[in-house]
Amino acid sequence: MKISYHGHSIVKIETKGKTILIDPFITGNQLTDLKAEDEKPDVILLTHGHNDHVGDTMDIAKREDILVVAPNELAVYLGFQGLNTHGMNIGGAKEFDFGKVKYTQAFHSSSYTTEDNEIIYTGMPAGLLLTIEDKVIYHAGDTSLFSDMKLYGEEGIDVAFLPIGDNFTMGPRDAAKAVELLQPKLTVPVHYNTFPPIELDPEDFKSLVTNHEVKIMEPGESIEL
Image 1 (cartoon, rainbow, N blue to C red):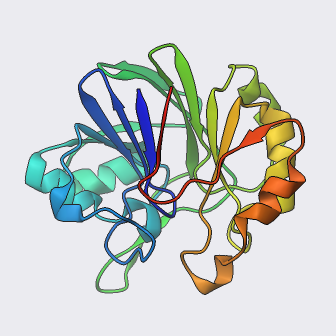
Image 2 (image 1 turned 90 degrees about the horizontal axis):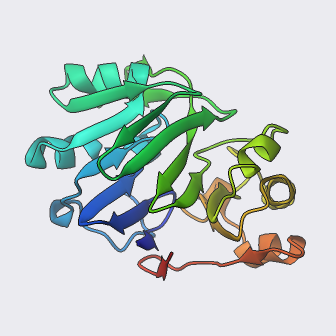
Image 3 (image 1 turned 180 degrees about the vertical axis):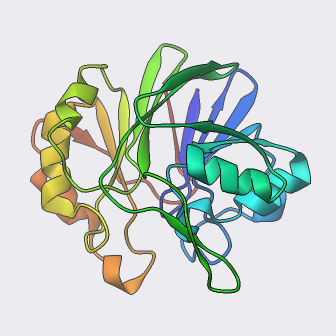
């Protein structure tokens, strides 16, 4: 299984001939190496409705008739826009042909802003616990630190993608505490340096994490699980 990072919170997983794309904020993302017109995933997974996470979902999914899995209200809204969606909610899990998806809680907000500046409520924000090829991947979405992360760690997380940018999510210090609760084999920081309010040096986060491996990934860089 190949897992790659593509700036902001974009993660791509290639497994069993399937490609999973998480939070594809490509257009307007100065850090990504991707081009929206080149992406042909088999499924898109969304953590919440903010535009810097939904990103290019509508264009990609409509063009390729791709399944979009999202928190329920977001899935309903995207369905109204003509997308093929599957709604889920926090605590719920489902087996797909590529693996199991479980939505976890995240402490944040969730809305989508249209081109007409209308703000659409898109339900609760969430994280993702994915079980694929007997490996567990945790994408925390946008969140603050919360103690139930310790329970998620009991799943035996192989790699965790954690926001560290501060201002809108956890900052480096709280993200380091999240690592202590989650106990992942590997942690990758995400959601930083895309906009001025979240600009920081990820090495500051890495320096706060003790006894756990942290990998700062450049856009386009990948790991094998």
